[in-house]
Amino acid sequence: MRTEANAESVAQHLLSHDKIVLTTHMTPDGDGLGSELALLRYLKRRGKNAKILNCSTVPEDLRFLVRSGEVITFQRGKHESVIAEAEVICAFDLGAAGRLGRMEGPVRSAQCSKVLVDHHLFDNDLFDVLFVDTRASSSAELTFGLLEAMGMKDLDVEIAEPLHVGLIQDTGSFNYNTTTPSALRLAAKFLEAGVKPYRVWRKLNCQKPLHRVRFMGNNIARIELHEDGKLSSVLCDLDYMKKVKGEPRDAFEVVNHLLSIRGVEVGCFAVQIASDKIKFSLRSSGRIDVCDLAKEFGGGGHRFAAGFTTNGMTAKDAYAEVIRRCCDLVNPGALR
Ligand SMILES: [Mn+2]
Image 1: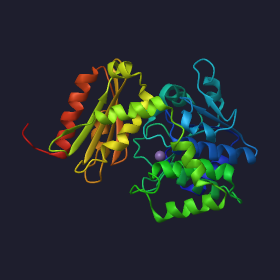
Image 2: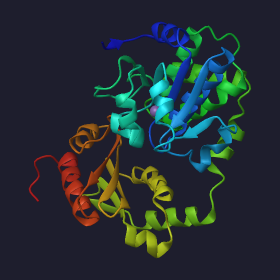
Image 3: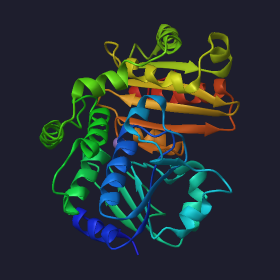
Image 4: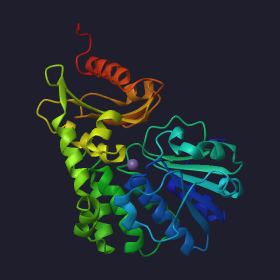
């Protein structure tokens, strides 16, 4: 049975079980990781046997949030039993089932209850309890509601800091349309609990190795414009990364610069992660929905920030195809 749950019912559901496995999407961001860390810490205080099991390792810039032993990286042949023995699996910020990566199969086979806490549009065929609100700024905001519903009395920095990171990442430091009055009230609560915004900002944004900053500069220098400047794009393929000694994980930041150009309505960033796998990130300045296009290619996300990965096409072909579709988005029906 599938239930559209509220914070109270999910809270009771979690509290009535003991073995709880928390997880989030591959290459976790601050929102997914922050949400699961906050819930893990609270569940442990409540005496629960809770674990975080993720399909990818914690990205370097988020490691400051994690204490040793708090996050387990899923390994085939080793951690299937953790999933099989769980009484509840609770996933955060997922967006699409495929984003469980190598864990998708084991999670699908598990017999236990599966809870999703998310603010993405989600085509669900996996979870039996859905705590999804696409109007929420972040999964962190929903997780905070869940903690309150569980009876959390005193919010402290151990729980507030990871949630704060989720909140600031998903609101673009309180600049995106996701910046609601309740998001700002939540930030105030986090600061009252001891979060130091300057510390968090330094940890998140001022710890880059030189080669990554230079690599970003190289990518910015290669931004192309299409359709009278309404569409901006960059392709970062393996040949190029080899030439400049860049890595896919260092490339993604360039996406934030695609919409910084006057007149650009859609930004498309493509990075080749394997010979026939190209990861696309689409961003919209706020008029054009890019999520439907991402869904057509098997991905998803939000209306103005979405992504997907193509399989079985060369980087050049996949990029050409996606750019053609993006041109149609910014200038529908144009002859070209
Ligand atoms: Mn999120």
